Length: 146
Image (cartoon, rainbow, N blue to C red):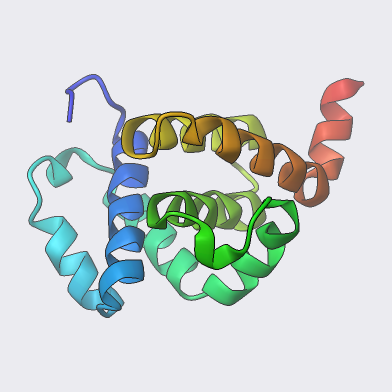
């Protein structure tokens, strides 16, 4: 990871990696937290944000998938694990971290998709999250238009 990344961006990257690990291995959250905390560069991440994002996402996977499922163009099972992990993480942030502007959440998700996803995966992520934000953050979006 480059040293130019903010502690918050690093926290999101580590949370994404933890969610991805959970999707593939089914490891418990404490095992994943322990593993991620030993990865090089973790000391530069916002640990509190990482823990909140990882636990908040993995504690609510079914609800989060229910929220974004109407906006994906294929069955949930056909999403790549990276796309699914990014959508889970960003959906959690849109729903539960209202202090983070929706545009920041979407931008961070796009950057994660560019860094970890398929070539045009960021476009898919952007499209899904734009529609989801219109539902979950309608008041915020309306206020910005005024």
